[in-house]
Figure 1 (cartoon, rainbow, N blue to C red):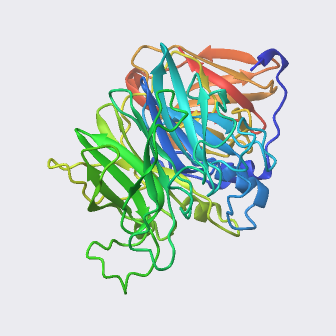
Figure 2: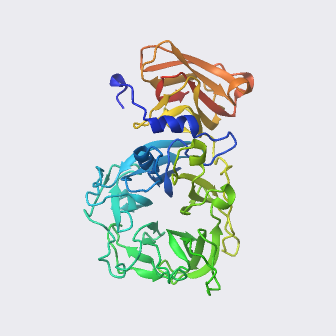
Length: 480
């Protein structure tokens, strides 16, 4: 961003609403992102960073203004966020995917972008990044890029999976991809969903297929996975030498079912195999529907991943829309919780929590931090270019677990010029609970800094609060 020519960014009514109402308690790390809606999480671990991609429910919310239920039909983009500690997240913006339906994305043939799946692979000496997405329920496309955040191109100019693919003609919902790259570099894709009224016990609508070396073509014909009570939401993981296929079960009433393995509605079921293409054997279920914990029921969409030696599960809920309080619903946010694996390879039933996961490492200081990086915020709207605009005086960003042990002495910001105001930096709380360690008076320049005033006991790990005056638009900040 050219800070010499910066102009103030407009904040939409819905961005303002989320800034004022979508609030997490200090002890809560879920939802991981509260300032915008997003669903169907997919996570990519690359180096020391995890990237979170979601269906952009916020795009639909901007269209409906919360006066109609989420119909998903206006979603042509994906959200992407990044984190090094699973608690503080950076909003990296939107990825334009679909090129129809008012979209301007790379996939000119597509009308929607739902339920992303992501992977990376080293090809020809270069790391390549792939996003697989659903064009509503009628096909799956793939985008390719040179970084986790793009830019992305459509290497095919057409769907990767359509109903013309053998074995896919009669799948009810040709969507919800999952992808994995094995240690040997082999890639595999999983997808499918839906059922007819008389086939809800064994819909036979899930598919698995090998991918070509370039990750953008199919290597063979898809094979059927007989996933009992399948509804949607394919997932795939390899733990040890065992492959786990996971999915969301359907909502059909079970009272007439004769299947001995019948599962509860809308939970995450799992199957296992010693082969990535199966056959998979049904084992049970491993995540309750978030409605059992929070009272708001909806489809259950997940992604299981390993980061820094531990397993986690991401999924979406509809808890934040209650907090925001708009007229209609179906707008979702992502939660992440720890994921247990038993010693024998079985998967216990996991629970949904608002507490979420523990911070896996301190937040490192010393480098420039984009404004849209925080664990929680209040009255701070993230704009379309990932700046942060204070919609009320005393708005704040909270960065959890920042490492001040290196003897930091200076606090600086870049912002849209704002005269006769000041940004405060606090540690360990707002009001009388915390301590102000810097007050930076803003003039007419886009960049300014001031010395820190650290108390003797401030060395170590602290929560930071960047407190903004109304009308201030923050671009980035630095403590060094």
